[in-house]
Image (cartoon, rainbow, N blue to C red; front, side, top):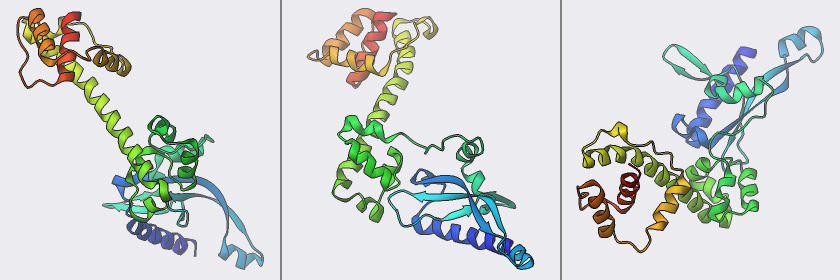
Length: 253
């Protein structure tokens, strides 16, 4: 009886994944919550002539933007097969399950919603998102269709704020990654080896300040200054951010 019950729940889980469009690439759209529940062991109850309850581990699957669908599965029930190997719901979310087993607070994956406050999102809107089981910026960005409509009149504003945050983070990450590459380019321009250049420990704030410091100075003037220091002129298609970074590194060398 218990085995049939677990098998049925596993089948329901596969159907639910298909219905809500949740797969490995969209796990941030769901948040697992592991807990204990009391369930009746029917065979034991029939033998004992009374209800025999057992405490088992389950996971409640909370779907972003949907307050009405929240399936619950035993942690050792099958989520899916990988060849001959059965992957359980506990294995699907190992970090959250480990937090549960260790008695720690269970935290959602992704970037906290509070990071959207500088992008015009209000604390009450953050509270609204949590009420609708949207616990991260990435989950908000993934909302589509009816789930997005559940945000009401704020849906466009909130979705745009999430997109702006992720784009801003991507831009800053690209700048920091580009800085490392520029050290080698400056070394080539000066005819030196890259390893003699100082390490670049600039923070994102320092990079933004450096860019602001060149406001009103043309790209041509920046390129002229680089040429004076290094003896070689940057390519004419070099972007402004890269030019500023090259000049900063050339001065530091």
